[in-house]
Image (cartoon, rainbow, N blue to C red; front, side, top):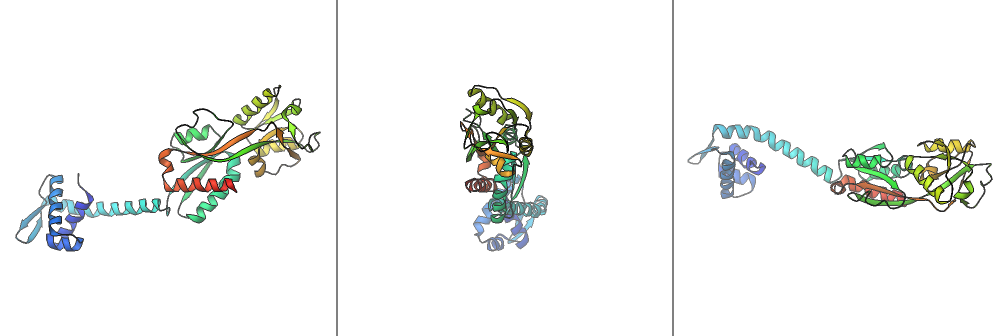
Length: 296
């Protein structure tokens, strides 16, 4: 295998015309230059230099290798500089996937802080709910997935790096004129006869489970992944809902009132990545900023 250090020596010998002059240019000893040239000829499998007294003359193979060496070394230098820029966060790219309420609450502050600290790092954002977002991470289509889960799901994220961010409590939404609009706390059972408006599929499953634990099956008349639509339907008096607090923070509910719900329904908000990606500086910096944004 031809090594870059050997190419640098060959180019120096070709430029200066001797081992001693090449050694002075490279800041090493003449025996070191001679040793590296022997190693290069061994790798190439042919003679590269003809030694006639104190003069050095390139063979045809040596001329071909020197001709290519400049481009190879220039490309390697450019690659080294690019890698150093990425490692030093002067450059780099992070592909982030987030669920909608995370996109509107946690992500903006985190990315603004990241840009201020590392302006050369670029972050792209697309939205997907788990488990789709986690599948994108496993398939190599993103670097970080902002996700959530209700309770501990055994083995769901075992092979991933999990950065816990916060616990998000679900709160109730009722129309302003609702009989429970001014209640200090509402039990799920008190809403058993209501028309329900459900959110994303995972939230919907959790709602049904909690209601069934309270002795009833919710009558879900409307289902939408769009949180503003849920709030609009509640505000229009078409039903009640429970939504993550992050979702309510991102949209001001018009015509709807928020009420604490018992028993508490909580979801764990996390940032997920792969073990190898966690060591990439730009990914690590983004995870840190997401943690700081969640703590604010």
